[in-house]
Image (cartoon, rainbow, N blue to C red; front, side):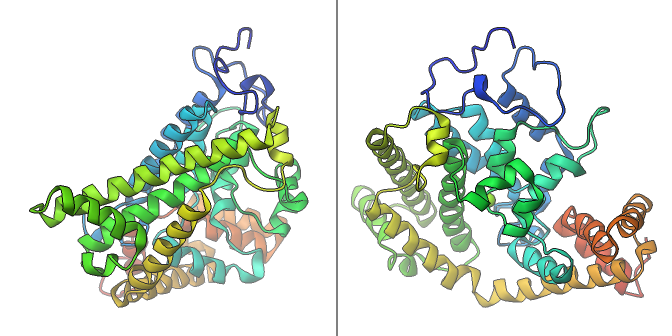
Length: 390
Ligand code: MG
């Protein structure tokens, strides 16, 4: 890049494009865009991103049109991530790109699907959704003539890989090193991480109420909700429950985001980092809430775990989802000829390269790419003798 204007106005410890560690395959500059804007645009145009619309968080896609899907979740995460990055004068396009890509590797049926697939892959290297998101952008997307995947920048890939087992970290060279050395990721990656938590904790309150899994009265046992509920009721005594819910949640998000900005800035002011590398070398993350807000946010998380994620209706669906994933895996693994041509070829190539683990990985890649509805239909085609086989 001849003149790098993308870094104008950013703090010296932001992820500056001038200091990028670049892409795995060298490419000409991105022209009118910055490098991280190009990352973001590649993510938005990829197939895995579009599939997020039919993948769920907590509720299965066909249960209702108004619940969050992974796509709307990712957009909410990106919105929060952008606001926080911009306010702290960090790299907004990078934070946005990481937020948009963070769930690309998710299986159908949310955490239930991920756990089931991890169980199926126990003897073959396991299945981690963060690692899979990286596999999607590094290997599985097929869009460019000159390289596999999306060829994203190091910084974007670093941010996507939020967690990683030591075993997988060892396979990743440079990118895995920080998990082995226990270093921190960039501030933009740290922001994406917390933005994810703010987004799902708050939208799961909304979805949980809408689904009738929790009531407003039950929510009042959570201090964060109770405090904002009281403010809204005092100001609007006759408000309808729907508006009350949204007025409460928007205040919760706003308070958490504001606290996140203020507390993070205070930590940065105290630590006085000079470069993005100082951030990576720090003993802990800089991006985070005040202790008080962190405790409240944790309490909300615990409430959701108990009342929403472990609600019997959710558990019943979770069970069904796990069974679908396990059945599909077992069927394909036993006979890869049941897979579509391109995937059975990948399974045979995997088997030739890495034996059973290679075959299992190709099967896991195929299942992880499925949407909820595709997995359900495919399960019927394979196991219900009354349905057509293809
Ligand atoms: Mg997420």
